[in-house]
Length: 318
Image 1 (cartoon, rainbow, N blue to C red):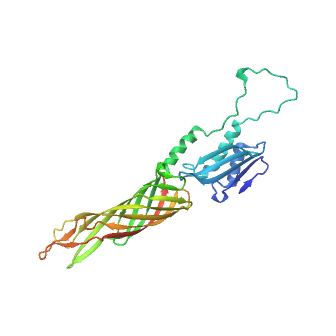
Image 2: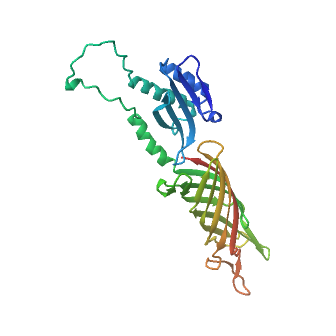
Image 3: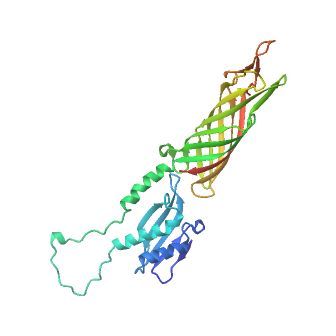
């Protein structure tokens, strides 16, 4: 833990100095500028932590001697580390403006009659301003969404860029570490499937959509997710070497499991890799056939009965 005191009676400390959100010196300058000099044995401490809903927040506490007099969570969504020092200073300024220290009693004061209207008020309870409370709930809901892009490599179809979105509803979370989500990914494969039959080349391009239900376990800065995976491939085949050849289409369904591991290099960002594997309903899909004068139609570009693909993912909380 690092702290800076100086000439101020209010001491500033942080239990997460390596996070630099905000840097300790920057926080001290902002607090000194807004709060000024404070009389009394006050000690303020802040820390950058991850809340139960996955978002990063600043935990701020203020003690007078050994007594805790203020505790606050400041969400970083929409603010970032650049304004975090000012946010800490603003909360402390409001606290010291709201709390009035009673004057020391005079010696042998004359009794003053107290009417019911003059009864002393209870010490004000400092709470977050209404606009701060209103911001916290939407921020938690927004962080349930995750946008991601990357690349996938399929054993049969080769390389494809991937684009997807995932939702991890707060209602589906178990404690602070486990959450269930739903993810949708789209992948257009770059290289077409090809097959040559008697010097006639048939090609097929593929677009894959995949739906998964990952169960994710967070152990910061790492995460591990496993769950069922369902995919649907749309293929368009053509044979340019044939006269009057018309494109043909088919759908291939498949299902299996997906496993992914992720690492967070910075708040709200995730780098991950994974693998998906399972079976394809090759026999239930429509076939591409090449009509021949002799021997009847010949099936071409017959899909594999299984699939396996690796993934590289860059994710960003929304």
